[in-house]
Image (cartoon, rainbow, N blue to C red; front, side, top):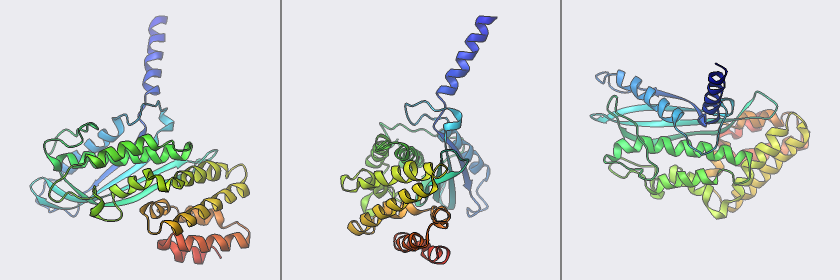
Length: 305
């Protein structure tokens, strides 16, 4: 009996040690799809996507259940262009815990409008990073997109904990881009598909001219957010240094996707951090943020006075 108990402990411990990296909540919204389409298909798709993301190992590292990266995917179907083929957008959100708090700081908040895929109810969702595209490009496109964002989530999370820690996962994401499905109505994988898409996001993170962005993510989270509990003033100063780095980066590399990407979802967080700053720091921060995060410029101007 004792041996059996010991064996069970090792089995349970082994399962915990190899827990998956992502704790994802995937929602499929189909309200815009014609009523004559069987809605059960989308409930089945939602279940299949949750299983695909949450049960697959995306790294070789061991994660405890409480260390899994919390993330959300919202797949919003806009239309069915032909039988079993759907056009959609996907909003990807991920958050990172802040040391000594229960707060989760947003690290990704991005909407991708270039999602077209084929799905037949109960079809198996397969992905092979060595053979990204299967026999049907539209079928492969959905799992390629999901895998791409899974690797990007892991990459940004690892970058926030150690210098250049995310590189192996950005490289895996780039491999998907390089071998992505190609065909009619499939977009978002090529440089010429636009200036803010899957191609450019990972390109920016692996481009040797933009290595400062790795310092931005690491310094913002490890030297800034993670130190807010222990020394708010020092942490705020580190975050101000990050904003100065981003300002220099933006001056030298205007209109790059990664600059806009960094700020998405962070306006409320940044306003709260600098609301208690000395007046001169608050003014400088407001000026920087109005320039760097144009979408939320009016908020910074009004709330950081």
